Image (cartoon, rainbow, N blue to C red; front, side, top):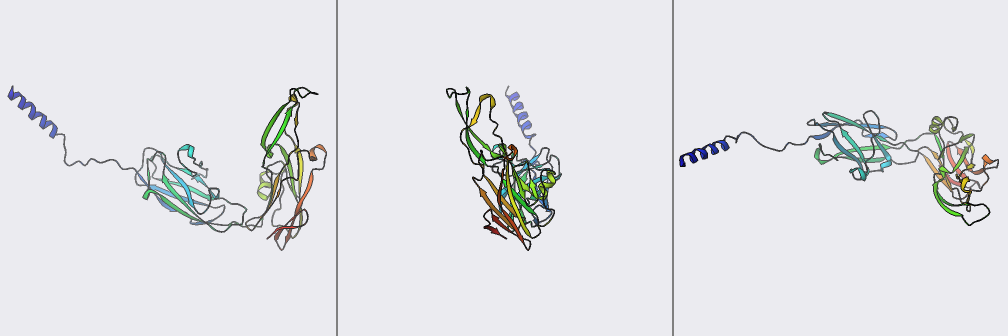
Length: 336
């Protein structure tokens, strides 16, 4: 019996030692590291786009997700991100697990390289040069890692300037009002008060005129070359720089439609103001605004109903190609 036990013990030792190979090094598999290999430009004008090129040191069987965010030099409204085909990528949010505002960059499975675009938003504002800094970090599934923990992308954005006029009448304003549902006529026994809060875009129709140009049936109303191209028939605009002279600015309250319920004999309980803001832009060089908090009310005359809904807002004077905005009393509000 003792002989048999010794044989079994010897076999067990041999079996255990035969499984060990001193020449094999057992380590955890490293995740792929993604680096930036190129940036098509480091300085652009508003409206222009750069392409950022990435590469990985090892392909991976699944998509690798990264987050691009602006960390200094501007605001999130200053840029948009798109893929190689120019299709905008969705903005991230706290709800999708990516934290604060940014863009999700998706490095495809099995791909060795990937590109995406950053476009500087073109606006009408007079601004100085902005120096934007972006940070690209690993996110979500963390299948891949950003080289050095984060990849930084620096971009200088210069102001866009043109001779174009962009005039805006913005009435996307939130208002509150009260209606009464008179369920039985000639008695208030069953009257019911209803509180409403809505954007004026859903309730009224303003028309907007500057000189011989106009904008109809949109909110906000905008007289510009871009809006005229997008809405032929509803908008006109000058085809180039404004000639020296005076251009009268007029608003027209065309219609107020609160959608009152006839079946409930619904009526408005008191009138309310219909505010708007007028903004005149000489793109990239001049911006001026005037607020009109109570020029019109819900009971003001409406052109669609046969009334005169037009009101003089002011005058745009052009002298030597430069803008001067005056109010309805011919007082200078701003000058270029």
